[in-house]
Image (cartoon, rainbow, N blue to C red):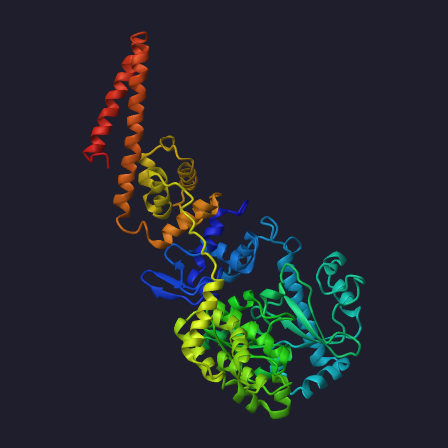
Length: 589
């Protein structure tokens, strides 16, 4: 939470951030009415339920119920704390945050400090590759792999020196503490002065241009692992990063398509061939998080994996993941035991590009593989196994029309009756179908008071009127009273309360979701003034009636014992009666 950070500073940063620009850099948004819609980046869905309202500077997903302001979005999407989110957005809009008073010194912000260090080290590795006499063999390696200087510069390829202690000694002289360096992930856990990367071609992992969160290193020495990657840290989760993403992002967004390779050198080979929209996992299988990252920018993927058995098996898993989040999957068939980097060397950039630009549907790729593996020795056992093999991919396909078309293609290949194949697939699906979860009911009871205060929390321009007509003690609902007090405090500070600020200050997560959902759904947009006025009357009327009942009860209980007190009670009853009459006649507005 904001804590001691001045609220007006937070609001100024929020005001300057264009929420459409921020969210749009992660989600493909389409304009409908006065809102923008897209597929939610926080959960898997096929139909857009994620909404952004630039007028209120808020977002909300009607599927997974995540929502909030620009700070909350960045916290959710990047896994940041509030201060980190605030710091990044302040930089984005050109607001300098005081370094000590608000706790943003590098020593107190590990994420920022690590990113600064990694960017600096990437520059050091790059200099070594370009300029050091000791890096001749590294330059020769890249030359033999047909990687030119332009591509190496674009991907900031570097070389980690053979002297394992050089980097530690250099950084120590730059005033980095031994403790910070030991925790940085750049050095051996057993020997803190020894670099984790020694005599390796270095590939910086960059989620954005200028941001380095990890490294992947290709060995140039014998008797060492061919590739190693940075250990996971507060800035790096390998399942959530893609090599080449910073360089590919703009082209992926433009083409609405991404090319997936297996290795770093494959990325450079494709880039060398003029294909820019290319990324790769990092020492792991393609993950759902990586698929979702691509899904924010693309509608389809082309899988360009090695032509061996392991490559084909990995391609199937990647395609199933892609289809399961709504990405159409295509594939490029490579010759057996070859990869894009090999083709660049043996056949040249033009031929590699020609292969990449002629993908086939992934189902056709599977059928080709099926035919090749079995030499079309068609019998009942083969037909059944063929359906078994293709079922995981078919299950991931969201379109019933496309799935039925694929089943007809399969029937043709395995020489079976299409209707029988379709019937068999559907029979298997009925057997495995799970009972759907019951939809969760509304968790917050909404009475007149809470409805009124949530409406005013969204239509904050009506708070001044509410404040004049309702005292806080008139509210019995504790959630409604909580909203009132937050708004009253903001108003007392001579600020017009803003919905996003109210959301930040509320601690009740369910109440936050309710307000965001209604704000983004436009529940209070029509006749807001009339609705709020009627609710004010209802709440005030209930209070007055309860007060009158209590006064009458108190008057009867005294039974003339305290004449002066009774006169005061009668006078108040008369005043209450006039207020009730005025409300009923509509004169209390």
